[in-house]
Length: 100
Image (cartoon, rainbow, N blue to C red):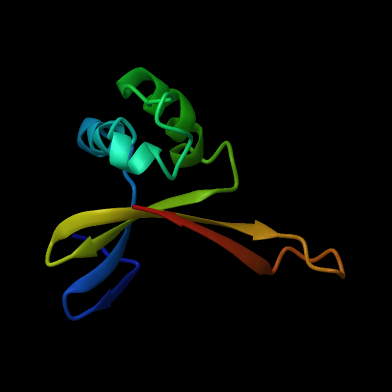
């Protein structure tokens, strides 16, 4: 596994433009326990919606970098980051958002 960051059993890896990563996101984003805190329980993300939402990020048409949090070689969460403009207008600040 190619990791952006690795520390013993914990790693951060880029989400890939492949079926397995889209299926994992669809599984998580269709789970009522996750949706209770993300998008609402009545708003699941089936596979097609996950592709529509996340493929632009993966194909660099958005400035968002999607990643998976990995523990003991298993994905345990999602995190994304993107550049934001600082007060001087430079794009050298970063915003992070994490979900399980």
